[in-house]
Image (tube, rainbow, N blue to C red; front, side):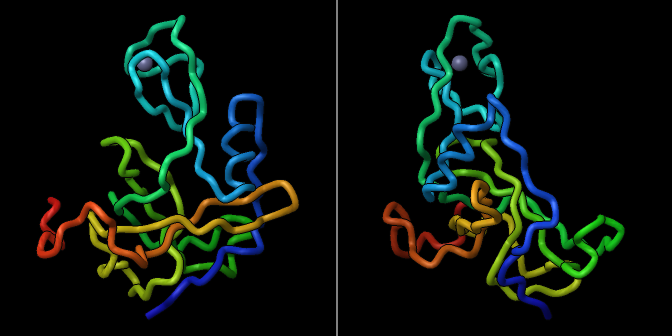
Amino acid sequence: MTITKTMVPYPIMPVPNEQTQPYWDGTREGKIMIQRCQKCGFYNHPPLYICINCKDRDAALVFEQVSGRGTIYTHYICHDNSIAGFENKVPYPVVIVELEEQKGLFIMSNLLNFEYDAYGSEIKPGMPVEPVFEKASETITVVQYQPATQRRPRQAAGSRGSRK
Ligand SMILES: [Zn+2]
């Protein structure tokens, strides 16, 4: 059994561009900012030049803060030590988190502070998770995830595990 407590140091650093800079400005302040269409309300992530939902070229796209809370959509345990810089980090869990704001709104991340076996059989779809902000450099903070430490307010008692 393994627990990944951190992915620091980061051997490969994200490079923000004009389109993604607001996202990285947000993570540095401990916020997750997701580009949202002001016409139809759809969240686009990664950010796009046009809303993928309504495809209106005139619709404004503005970064708005989301809660960061979500659930595991799927995962794998990376055992591949051929990725330069990550040789000594294997194994580590790679997860796709579905944010609670919108069905199909995904963030790719690693799962920290959770004990897993070679296949990550304990990492279940629908598992509630929360963000952890890892400072990777002076300018880059990476969003990671860990199991939710607090029950979500809207989860009524007795509804545990009955989401899917
Ligand atoms: Zn739209």
